[in-house]
Amino acid sequence: MTQPDHTEFLAFAETLADISRDMLLKAAKQKLDIEIKADASFVTTTDKAVETALRTRILETYPDHGILGEEFPSVNTDAEFVWVLDPIDGTAPFIAGIPVYGTLISLAWKGAPWLGVIDHPVTSDRWTGVAHEFARHNGTPVKVRTCGALEQALVTCSNADFMAADARARFDVIRKRAQYVQYGGSCYAYGVMASGRTDLGVDGGMDAFDVYAPAAVILGAGGHFCDWQGQPLSFDMDGHVLAAGDKSLLDEALAILSGA
Image 1 (cartoon, rainbow, N blue to C red):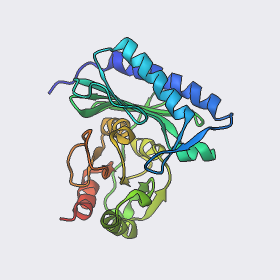
Image 2: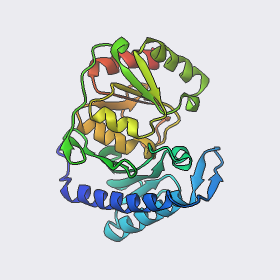
Image 3: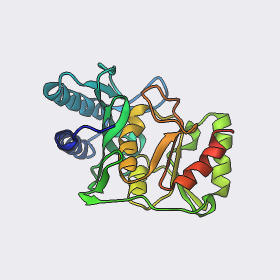
């Protein structure tokens, strides 16, 4: 299936990332107004302000497109093109001042991750990508790396506490066999995978807004991104996701995580 032309949409997505970067850099210097959501996660007025600004620009520019965001109700998610937004991925690190937080902006096409931006304001890192076409880090093309086996793999996991007990048990098999597991990188971990610095990403408790932009970037860098059953991501996925640079490593991890 021929994909749409990405040129206009990617330029617009980077404009959105410029808006969010400016807002986050200013907010990081101010006292934060913090709330606890029903799921016990953090949210700040900055999360809401950034998403509001991005939604406003999207609806002005593409009124027929849908929007799926973290902080406000979804709009028109049956549309051919749906913008998937996480205004601050890593709100807890943002509150703590640990600079792995960023904004995730994705454009889904026919429900699947297609175009993505991972923007990290404090470190001035930005990954962009179009699934199965290309990925770039600060404008320079990047590719995932090969990895022969799990025992040689550098694995990332945002937080294993987000996993249910049975999923955590399966992840522990990965953890014990892997060469090393790095925790707490938020979306930065997916960016460095696209740049060929890590091999496997295993996460639970995720929503579409957490992973659609990273998925588009990693798929663009030649990698793989799916759920723990090996199925493509969807808006109503169960939250368990797996990313890999190497197909053989993906298959090895799936054999463990799927419970097969």
